Image (cartoon, rainbow, N blue to C red):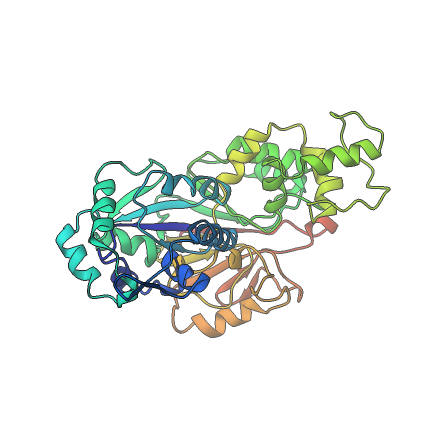
Length: 420
């Protein structure tokens, strides 16, 4: 989930072996494999040997970065297999890392002796051989610059750190708190949230987890965002990302600026006026949510977009914690089972019920009980987002459903977990 790994090392240093060792093939984009797709090996007339063509390098990297962005947009674990021997090789990832809120790691093979690289290079199929003089140049470049600071550099032999990047996702210990409180979808309904905190004042001894969908549908989006901005940096507040957070994030990044100007002009408003009242011309812009564009956006335009961007960057995909001898897996959509390797799952499947992530009516609470009750008796799921069957908060023996029709007069579902 939202980890980008780039491999850095001369040809023959062991990058392919590393990918095989950690079973990362299906998460890896390899520049050389794309070169093979663009053109079959080219014959060298002087020696009668074949080699990968380098003539399509720009097309290769354009395609690789396009595929990478597609994967990063879904929050997948991503690996890029290339030499990355120049500073500009890392700069091309910076915007993607910021846009999709990724943690970036560089697995370095720079300590592999050049003699080993040359020897292993000759053990590969002939058409994959790299001339020794090319290896000499790449090896020298690798030693002459430091990787940019937005990448954490990890040695290829540091198995413990690598395991924590690609395999393990351990629950954090919440036993230092007196209580854990989990909130369901708020959907722009500030009053129920206010009533809860009026009765139960905010307490540093309580861990507060919100399951996402903070805006849209309700009429108090401004008040909800205002509260989040005041509290999201507190260490005892965890904000998860729901499917409705996309619209605020894209607006804060300026994606809808052109659409806003067009609609305001059609309504005869000044540039700094709010686009209220819906669109009389049937305008279809980049924002796929008319609810957000015409109802939520006018309520939150008063906030500095920089503040909104920082808020959106704070959103987490899941919260997995231990409390009073039990484990709790909190996510937005709800899932039918506990994944074995959380870091290898797409973030999108915990945020959206679309794009191959199931359907809105999936009985995930029932499935979670069927799959996990006996296998993990100490594990409980807490989620929101979907509740077409109108199940109660405790939807099954080990799954809590915090979704209700709050925007239509339903409840704000809240789960309090106390010791004993």
